[in-house]
Length: 394
Image (cartoon, rainbow, N blue to C red):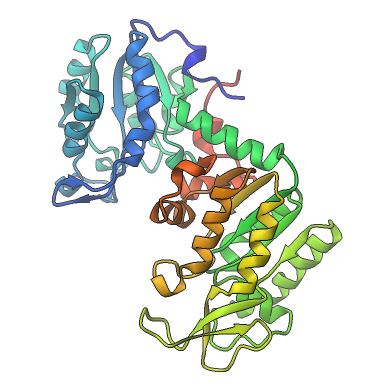
């Protein structure tokens, strides 16, 4: 267990907080502020408990140099509206300089300041020692509440923790609580649903979950590598030929552990990869040449729904098909609805799965939707997240 802001006295202290304000923008306007609202409980707690709060985040990929297309100034303006108080913006391309230090020194309890984009400095992504020290020099306590970057050892996520007392915010606490409990102390039966295009992206996740789950459900493009490994004709469906033996081995491991390993029994096919392609349904063993599987079929949907209905915990990472195309969104939507209607603890592991939950308007009916695609995936692989490991233990 990691210490949180509750475990440290912040009254009268300057607290620097790593948040994830990497929000989508169009013409200088934020189009989705969910990552910002996710940080508000921690920021509000610190302000209410007498802290002066300095926030820091990256945005986009400015390649380690100032690029004002990625300035956080619009974020500061929007944050002021969300908090209903002034947010001082430290507009320095160096992120930290003498002017910014003076601004931080003057900051009073109850006030908020936001630094410029961390990635304007090349040292950030290299976890540069000097930049870590510069960030630490602004405050007395460090709080990490950016789960989406916790799998990266950067100056603002790991390096700074060497120089200040380091604790987690409420968002990271919630992420670790739900993901940790789902994987390590699940209410059983524990059903893991894994989708996406490539087996190679999910090898470590599958191997880790074979040790923990009761049922593993496979969907998305990677299902066809497993099906071909099992002797099915898969037409032009996506397949990693160099992973066929691995696909057999993973299924054998699951069988040895008495873990149910469910693959699609039918698919919705397209004659090409396009929204307006011709479509048909086919059983997994009877896919015609020239067609490709782009979504799970109705029999598979029923099979997967039944598994979810009897589950105690469901973990979902990866779509069941090309859900961005309406013609092939049925499988992903059905899984999302099954989770929303389930009595189980339901955890959605960021990335495309989180996007699907949002697309179908079901966020409020899921126990926890992770804010970190890459971070949640690495956590599910059983890997140590540097941004979490750097925090103090209880």
